[in-house]
Length: 230
Ligand code: 5RP
Image 1 (cartoon, rainbow, N blue to C red):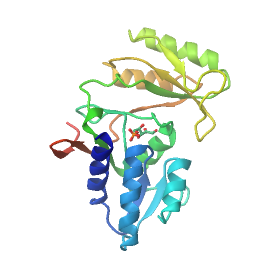
Image 2: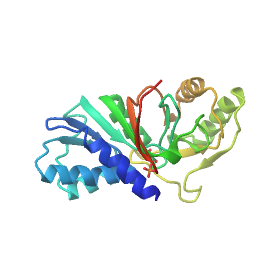
Image 3: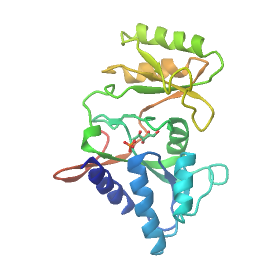
Image 4: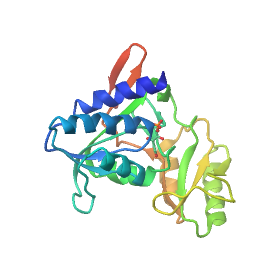
């Protein structure tokens, strides 16, 4: 059922896309429904150019005949459509479950609007139930891990970090970085955590998206609701 809801949210977002738009295209299973629905509209004559947020999305979009570009060629975009792992009532997000958080954040930041598509299970009163992905440089991993634990302790947050994929074969992002997932349960101080994490030299970025989403389409059994930041 969750797949059906993801599809409904994705299809609603496609209705917002108009010919001439420069479009950021997200990553994940919900974003894949968006790519498929977008490709159908492109075959019907919708004329857009997309910038994918991952190699996985690039491959799918290319296979389906969506015209693609890069942020270097098209540094300002009209709208990005992407999924999320969690959204709070003010549309702060946790992203990066699919490992594409860095490119997703760069693309969303370069866009006039960011539309989030999600099923209602992603809505939470407070972020943190989904482990927070923190993208780190492989060099100095242990030092960076200790610095992150220090930040978590300073904010009274649980100090449990797991290296995605495990030590023997860590998951590698499109940028060649690793991901430490922080199991936090409830992040009451989202802004302070975000600021302190990016101040650590070995941290490339984290999955907290604050004041980036301008609208969300959230699909539940009783229909797709449009949500705006408070
Ligand atoms: C990938 C992401 C995804 O948007 C997020 O993980 C949601 O994925 P899904 O739509 O498969 O639930 O941030 O990095």
